[in-house]
Length: 147
Image (tube, rainbow, N blue to C red):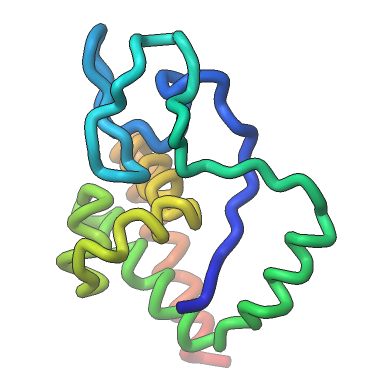
């Protein structure tokens, strides 16, 4: 399976991790491994944290060269899935399981690739912002049909 690289700053603790899906004072649900994070809030990252630091930019470039460039059709399909999920105000799980049709094995790699972060930022939009994006998307579709 091809690999993807998501560059983000490694958080100091699980509590600050962008992949955490649910937070309470004593409970954190790790979006990377699908389990409860065992660390007390604000303390540290867990010892077996699946986020790995990238030491060398050259390693990133080598991995990108191995992965290759997706086709325009592949990128368009992903964009359509993300837009459909945003229109439905769906969860990350709805996006990958119901819309994209993947199974449980897709959760961690797609989260690591940044799809959870994208989905969360899309679902945090106000209804007015979503409507504006939908209108812009529709205008772009119409423009693409004419050209």
